[in-house]
Length: 537
Image (cartoon, rainbow, N blue to C red):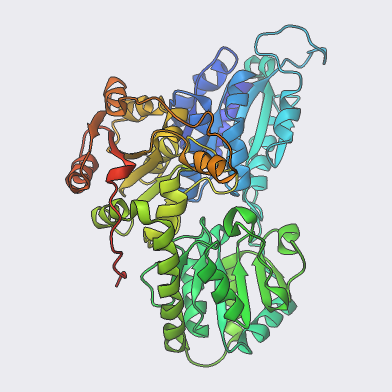
């Protein structure tokens, strides 16, 4: 093969791994990468901040099932993306961050180079699954292949690849590295048998399903129906079982009703979920009733070993468990249990989400079954939409669960819409979180995306204000001066509309979903209209 620059070696290797879209901002040190994008058919998406690039790549990965890719320049650009990388790590999302680094002959101590960071790769190593710095152009294809293998083997997580900036310009003969075939993560037969035996003996089984089961929706449904087991999901597992299925209780592991349901089960199968405090809000101990299936050996045993531990990928493991469960479906046997606990869950959820139920009801009516709702770390999302807005397909509710970062909704909605242009995508945010990534409205406008951005305005950081007051503290730093958010959206190239009446939201959403650009719809929290939630058929 003819010699290529290090920059082209990076891009050619990305293309060889099926990458068709990258998110990032060009800078002085990464121009050789940009020079090769067109030649290899890779589209570039320009955010307004590298954190936005990271969130967009995160959502793109969640909805497509393929790694998202971020290209930054050195120093501040990569560090801008670090928060998004940490969010991807927390929620087990495969994102590849590619950046230049200091030259090969950099002395290793401070020298005053442009964009110099004391230890850029070391900083990222502490945030993502791994950070690797290549030392030759010839090493680049193998390093890219290793990065993709790391992101897709067992538990998906973000990785960082650093290419010294001088190598991006150097020309060398490079041998391509084919994508590494990642094993399916098949569980041991003895563990499968033990899990099947434990579940077969259960009189009152239950399933807890997390984001690790997104690729196993069919197997989750089949096993739930075979066992007659009601299903509750974590935040990232929302929609793995359609929430109008007779065995679905709903999403949200923190509700008292969910704890009561799990306490009533004589066997609980947890699939692809950390059972983490970010989901449960309080420690959850299922004792020796727990059967656990996960691709992460360490996570599988936290906080203590379950009755049965199955290490493997969710779909093949569930299918093999099903093969060992003889007899007819017991789905109808579990319907009454599921509906009883579903009613209790709805009561809990409606009590918690009361201030936003009217708005969520309108959203539910406006959106199709396949629509994707992208939530910010806002009260309307974690108290409201998580448990009160039904979703019906995997990866149809995207939310920054573990890290809980603000500013996720708008850039992530951009990534989701680019990854799934065939479905409606809606961003749901609060006024505080919106301000973290407000500039990404301009990126969405430039892309001409029909993207409704629903902003519930409570005048500041409502959850923190409540926490301060509950502690008997004076509220400090939680009030935001009124801002004309629709005008800001229009200034950034979007449509913008103030809604003072909930009745106007439905028509506004319909128009926004058919618009020629994003539409920001601001509604004060006082107008979101608590409603009597009707049970979803």
